[in-house]
Image (cartoon, rainbow, N blue to C red):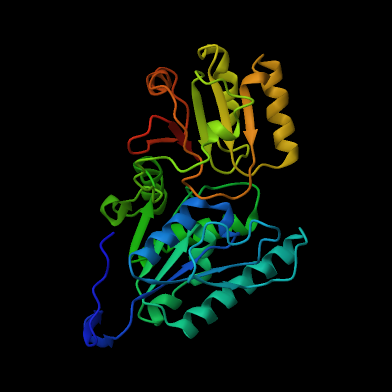
Length: 330
């Protein structure tokens, strides 16, 4: 991203007849409901924006407790929390949490008057609503996941329907790959030209920062073994079970590393599935805490990419610049 140029009397025009002056670095307000520590691409995006000369503020529903708080975020990024004070799973209380988050976000938009509002996924888009437009701030919807019609999770289901019906409220809609964008274009009934494709803010890396994943897992990965790495939240809707079931067809020394946050119940399920497939010793669930998006890089043989093309599985695939690791993102 090109760094912004600032002048004491730089004109800024929004709409047809609205002109005012900007005498400071533009402020970008990022809105995300769950802890941002669960989303390394969003952390990376915050840092890139900050390094490019923008002021960056970030609001989420509640704090993430534990030592992982603020891991990876650059200093100078202002954080806000709309504490709901309620973690009960009853539907009415979940609805109250959603409404409280919505109210807090809109109050913050009016208070900060950001130059750009960046909402991540459907729940944040619903929370922002048209408050950004009323504050004369461009609104960007950045989706990690495709909004889907689902039976469970009524609050998420409602937010998904909101973005389908109100897609024209956003000045820019962003997806990380064309496949997800096409699904949203179909479901929301919008023109494909209105949706942009922006990768999840990868950085070009010449030398992987240390320690590499291979070094961290040296006692479980042999030096010459091929490694297929999945980096992201580990759950039942990310096709990891398909990957494990396919492993008997992989080269015998190939190792599958799933790196990210995982619930104990699902970890036990995947381990049992790997055991039944006879590949338990080749499946590694690596929940190392919330690290930066760079800390997962490791050298891997180039045959991995050719093998993956032969046995494709769901997920978007990206090769990092000047590395030979295969990354599978959710």
